[in-house]
Length: 578
Image 1 (cartoon, rainbow, N blue to C red):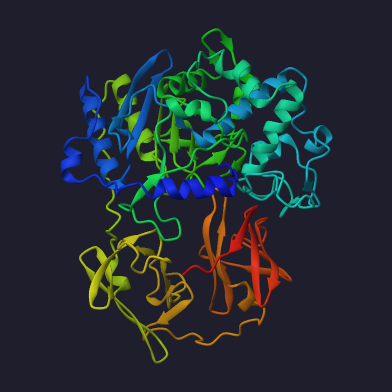
Image 2: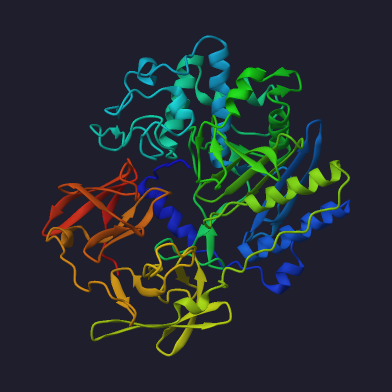
C-alpha cells in the first residue's frame, strides 16, 4: 500500500463522481450473465466455476488472471466487468494495479545494483541518502532491514510528511521484529534512483520491464494509463463499516510513483514476470539477477505472520510452503484494486489475480487454487476440489453471542442466533450481522448500526489450560459498552480529563484516509478499533505491541477540542457533520 494525498479539489471531485454510482451486487440474473472466459479443459472449467462463485460471494466487479509454468504462459483470462456502468467485460489488455507486489520489483533492482558493486546491502541507508527524514535512535537501518520490513520504522506510505520538521521514528532495534513498512520501500525506490542515476520509472523500465518484454506494464501510476485501465471501485460510504455486499462507487484517479506499490500491469505481462521468478531470475534474453541474488531474495529472513502462520519474509516477497512445496507469495492492496501472486518454485507453476475493487480482502484463494490445478495437470494427478467459498453471514459459534447485553439501567443490545447466523435487534427489526473475524461483527443494513464494529469480549476460561475460549460476557459498539449477567469485572473506569478533547470524528483528504472515529471505551482512547497507549501529552502509540512504531498525535486543541489528528502519517481534521 502507498499513501497518495489528494488535493481538496480532487477530493471534492471524487465525492461528486461517487454520487453517480449505482449499487452493484451480483444478483442471480447478473450472475447468470457474468462475463466469463471460454474454458478449454476440465481444470479451466473447475477454476472458472470457482471464480464465478468467489466473485459473487465477495462482490467483486471484475477479475483478471494470469497463469504460467516455467516455459510459457498457460492462460490469461478476464471475468466480470472492467466498467460496471458501461458493462465492459474485463479482457487481458486491461491494466490492474498490482499494489505491494511492486516490492519484489524493487528488490530485484537493488539486487542488480548490489551485483554491480553500487550497493552494500549491510551499509546504513543514511550513508547513501543522508537527507532522509528518519530518526534511527535504535540503530542504523540498512538496505537489508528495509527489504525485509525489519527497520523499526512506521508503516507510512509517504517518507516526506506535511510537517517539514516531522521525522519517521523507529520503534525497535532493526532486525528484532517484522513490521510491514511501506515507507521503507518508498525509501528503497529513492535509493534505486540515486544509485542508478535515473528516476524509478526509467530504472524499472530498463532493468525489469523491457528485458522481460512486459510491454503493456506501467512502472508508475499516471493519467496516461487510465484509458487502458479497468475502473477501480471502493466503498460508497467510507464513513461506515463496509459489508461484503455493500454499495460500491468508482474511485478517484490515482497518480503516484512511490515504489511501495506503483505498478499497473496486465495478466500476460505478470505471467512473464512470474515465469522469471520460476526460473530463479532467468529472463527470455538473459538473467535479471544471478542465481545467488535470487537465492538471497527467496531466503526466509524473518517470520511474517501477516501473510500466514507459516510464512516468512525474504527480499520484497514472502516465502512460504504449500502442500510441502516452497512458494513465493505476496498480495497488493490499493485504493481500488486487490491483487495476489503464488509462485510454486518446486512445482514450476505460478498464478496472478487482481480484482478491481478494495473491500478489505485479496484474491489469495484464487491464486492458490490456480496453482494447485496447474500442478495437478503437470503431475497427471486428479484435480483438487474447489475450496469452499465462505459465507460471511455465517459463523460456526453464532449462539455464543446471542443474548441481551446492558449498561447499567440503560437499554442495551439484544442479539439472536439462528443456525450459523447472528443478528441484532433494532427497533424490533432483525439486522443480519456479517462476521468480521475473531469475535467481531458488522451490520449488513445500509446506515443501520453501521458506524462501528460490534466487538464482543470473553471471560477467561476457568481452566487456564483449556483450549476452548471463555464465554462471551461483553460487547462494545463505538463508545457504547454493554455486559451480560456473566460479566464479573469492573464497570466503572477512570478517564483522563484531556481525553474528552481528543474524542470525535476526523477526516483525511487522502485517498487512503477517509473517516477515523476516536472514542473513549473502558477508560481508554480507541481509534480504528485499536486502543491507544499514552506516550506523553497528546502523543499515543497505536498497534497493540509495546514496540510498535505507529503513533497517533492530537493537535491544535481549540475551545476544548483537538482540531487535527496525525495518524499513520496522514493529517486528519475534525469534522462535525452528523
